[in-house]
Image (cartoon, rainbow, N blue to C red; front, side, top):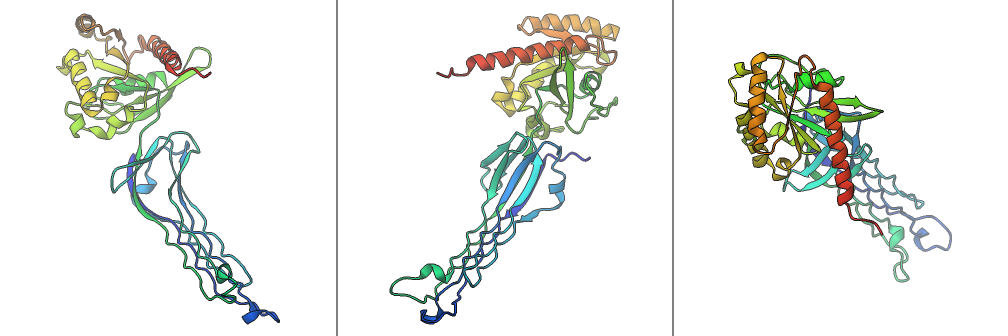
Length: 345
């Protein structure tokens, strides 16, 4: 399936039905007596998170969504039927914003979580509602209220515990293919990965975490260069970042400079994102020259109090140890979060 993580759509809630003018035919009742029913309420437009969905592809092609109108009232005090609500399913992790002013309306994270983005118009009152001692046979009714037309933006941010960051060809896709059942496209050219790939990693006694392979970030990503901010947003929900550095001397890159550039992009995009805990991983130690560069890189980063972990994603060397290290970091983060929560009396 094609991965689409943004869509702009127009939603229109249903109009309320009009009230009815009607009189019953009964002896000794002035003009038969009013019995016009109320109009039905228009349907709401409701956005619902669905864990079985993984893309906003459907909303790239169909742009307008309209709920059902309420039916008008009828005689014999029969109220019009309310319009059916329109349910719009989206992947869990979808943020809904108003296209007009950019206001965040809802952030649907849990499966089944919902938000009414446009309420249906109320039904108009029939003439039976306007009876009074001085007006025994009213012909007054109300029209149904119109529905709401609204332009909204749907933006998917993937839900994962861990996000793998790094320059193109650092080995992110190879790693996720080794430690999970995910099978991303892997090749030797930059930007092979064009969509975030999610994998469930199992370890220990029935323990697991969700890891996301984020497409390669380059210098200037926060301005939209490369794949840019299109995918930086997908690491906003993660609890831990695995920052992968390429040790291969053929790449011509300096791992420490890459480390600084990626972190600079994170800060430019979001201060909160830059403050997320990181686990720095040095990749491609299966190459002899890379091991020497790894020792030097470890020394340079240690001077900044940055700890590193070395692996070869291709051969799998160190991969399982990395999985357990990630699991331990997540456990500590969970404990810290609980300790920082206010105690309940």
